[in-house]
Image (tube, rainbow, N blue to C red; front, side, top):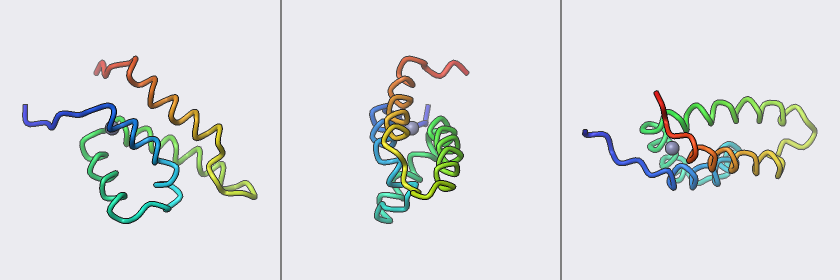
Length: 88
Ligand SMILES: [Zn+2]
């Protein structure tokens, strides 16, 4: 196996920064770290796509910030990933 060892803690760290990433608040090098992680982690990519759709809804609101409860549900989803190992 040449696939790099994938640490779910890394996924979780990604999700904790995800709202900043999607708000464009991260420095460019931090964005690169996301991009590199996503290249190796299709589940994160899929999750980000879902979040982007959710953020689109938020952006239609007067205050286009990721609300705290959405941020929390995002982190909760990241944690629940640990209970559901990839079965594909
Ligand atoms: Zn990941």
